[in-house]
Amino acid sequence: MFFAFAGGHTFKAHQFGKGSTKNDAAGKAIEAWNARASQWISVKDRAPEARKKVIAFYRNNQGKGREVMAEYIPRFTVLVKDYFDQDAEGGTEWDEAGEHEYVTESWHEIVDNWGDFSGCEIVEGEVTHWQPLPEPPTE
Image 1 (cartoon, rainbow, N blue to C red):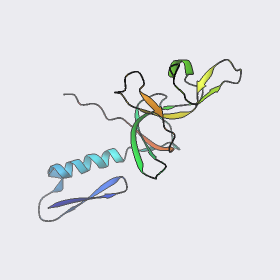
Image 2: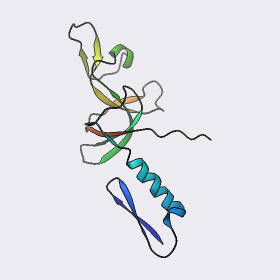
Image 3: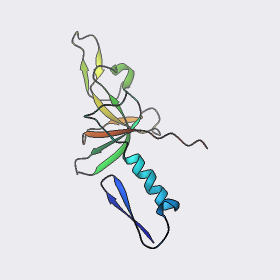
Image 4: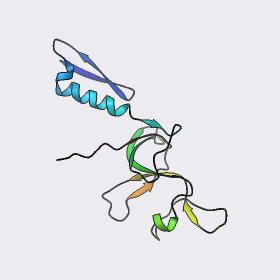
């Protein structure tokens, strides 16, 4: 019999009886999860490319960890007119010359099935880690 217990972001396998856990489906799933979990990058170490879809991790106001598809917007890189539609609200700031209005440095959760409105700023917590999206299936 095989059991897995959560331990941080990784799983530890405990096996009872004979046989290798690496050869069964549960063992392979745990190995895949551990490989993915080791890919977390602290935002203190580096940020992802601007506007690139990634998996972001943060804790909400209730302390629950959340993993979401998101994008990072560095300061003074995205013009408001190119990001928000006329009815949307979000944090903005002007450059020093007062010529251009930019989206403030922020993380935005991406939701690909909302049609024209496809994201919202993460405001109920601070993103601490991120990782690249996995490659999509080939079939």
